[in-house]
Length: 453
Image (cartoon, rainbow, N blue to C red):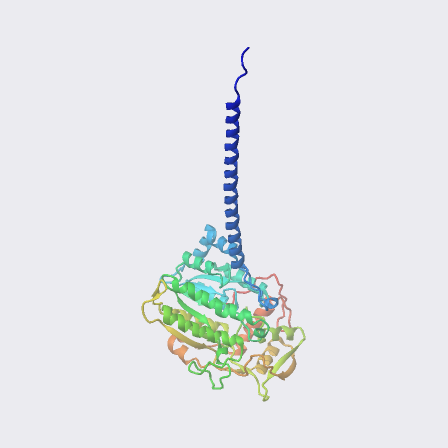
């Protein structure tokens, strides 16, 4: 009888193969776990970075956060990746006249920014706007200005000064010859409610712009808006660029003074050509609703009372009201006489131009006189409420000496307050569709606002 086949070797071989398979499976599982862990860790780090980049820590003042348009990583990525977007940017920034400028106008949807952009484009310069369309005042007015600029082939990039990647991208796309920096958090009184917004816009935003400009090749020449507020508690009149500016009466004034010192630093270290313009109470069509002439007009037409300030020693408050067209001429004059920056790639190659000028009307007018002119233009009596000026940062009197601006680029204001307010009221009743006694015909709100620059 035959003996049964010996299967011990086969069983051992199967056990060995099974062992090898389990070992390999364990190794594969361990390797997969490690890979998954590393991938998860990498993704988590990326998410933490993006969250930190886009959402800074909340401060104790977060409940008073200024309503700036938030610019995040995805926004910058969108701006940086679209061929159609780059085409719009280049087309808007390309000059149409020989030796024309290519100007980046920050705050282009603002009052002064809109008028300057139109004037530059009209004479053949390339203009690209930048604005964050914040809600400090009615954003619909800014959107209407944007629509006006669009009719004249001026494109506004919607973004914030503190978005460094966006600014860098703009300079990669366009070799700007000049920057007209008008973006800022405006208003003296609002600084008491939201001080952080002034630091973010007027200091951090300005520094961010200068950081990008210093590294550009070629470096652009920069003209930027300071303010007559820097004269603060100065009592010498008329205000001269030689007078002291170390006694600001408001946080707004302090941030503008800080801007002048920052400009000096970047000029000294990096060779940036910088010109600061101290504006004196600018008014006119497409103006700011937070300015007295604007809300006085609104309240007079609505039959509301208006507050008229007098100083603590019972004197009239007066301002050097300056019409927008005169300010535009000053801005363009400063741009036209701005010398080239001397740095390259963030390194200074020689001394660079550094200037500061007053741009005013040189004729202070009491606020009471302003109200009287508006009463005549609107054919409506104002309900006046005369009170003492509160201690909110406002100064009682401003008066510009513009000798330097006249000497260096022929600045000579030519519009008196009565003429300027007449143009403003004409625009106001048309834009807001108001039937006033000063206008016999009706206007509807869907009419195209007139091009008044």
